[in-house]
Image 1 (tube, rainbow, N blue to C red):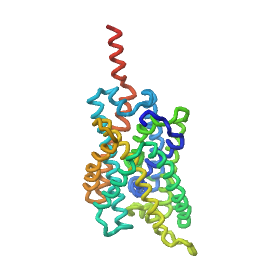
Image 2 (image 1 turned 90 degrees about the horizontal axis):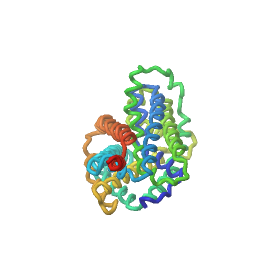
Image 3 (image 1 turned 45 degrees about the horizontal axis):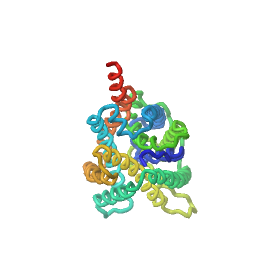
Image 4 (image 1 turned 45 degrees about the vertical axis):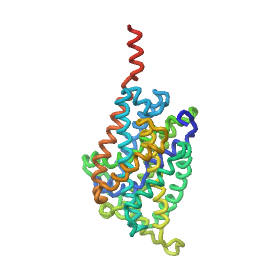
Length: 368
């Protein structure tokens, strides 16, 4: 399966979208409102523009290396030992990303659905379900993404249309009211929402040669950026800047406040929570698969199941570490930014400029 190219343009597009848009999107409006007030939409647009060259950087690296497996590329450029160490940084990044998301997911499920269920049990069940989903080949993962895309965005699109019943778009005024430094600091929060771009290292080698990869990537980033814009604008238009900044999950509160006279649906948040589970599982499964696949290669394991088993305890412990949702936000704002800069900017730039060791060796042999 490693050398088989089966992914279509839609498979690449849907994988990007469902990996990037996780459950943290529903707390995104609060974080932006705290940073830049009504102008959070500006930070979202800027982040989208930043994400595009990062995607092109990853695409260029994979293309220059004949779309080989990412771990092979690291070893070719940095040597076997250093390549494996750098590969571990991507495993750590995905573990932290998924584990912090798991903590948020567990807190939300416990608050809205399973109040008396121990959060540790929710963690274990979620991790085990994710482990089961990645036991099969990666082509099944891509098919899962293609189906999940419609299961996620058709229902959430209907819910968002219904939310228009309560909005007041004058709440978005005034615009350009924040200090210039606020837009810069808000990028820390905003750009982290594109941290799932590491999935491109996994999926690009599997895309069919005839597919216009850059076009599919652009569409994916555009869709994600527009979706982030819609969630922010709806939240601010419904509650206003000050109230949004006090709500833990503004989008959940917005949907819970839907009250349409004569509607056949009384509790819209019930529908929303079922969609919410899919939003997290798609992000979790894709990044968990990438981490397990990298672990398999780094430790020379026979099966990805062993890589997944190695990751389970670390994911569980990291998810348990924060004492509260506030701690999750604080840890994420520091760790995610550092790992984002290392894994999505620094290492890719080095890979793009550093010549493979094999080529340097061949050159030396010729000169002798």
